[in-house]
Length: 146
Image (cartoon, rainbow, N blue to C red; front, side, top):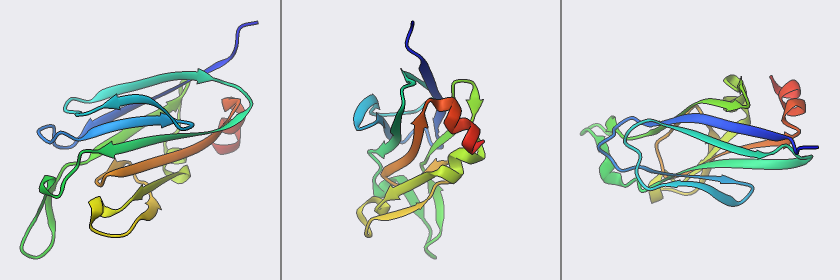
């Protein structure tokens, strides 16, 4: 009998391709993807075992500096480089609102404030990580959450 697998996929893009924002993807504490600079949109795909376990996937924004954000004299952000994570799927099932509801964004405002955990809405604007916890077999988790 062949082991069951689950394919995780998503599209990742940079709102300002001239800014060298990097991305790492971690699964259960192991680095599975490392891109020092994303300019063109990329399609991330990873296949994992569909075993009976708890899992965590983390998308980590890196290499952002304060120079990558333009702020006007009133303190308003007028230009900013961000990574956008969209079309997150397990196998062919798009998570859509479940991804937003179940994810958390951990960052420290690029070192200008203390660490915070916030709701994630699809865009990463600060160095930090977006975390999604799930269980396998994935179809059971999908049935409970979709």
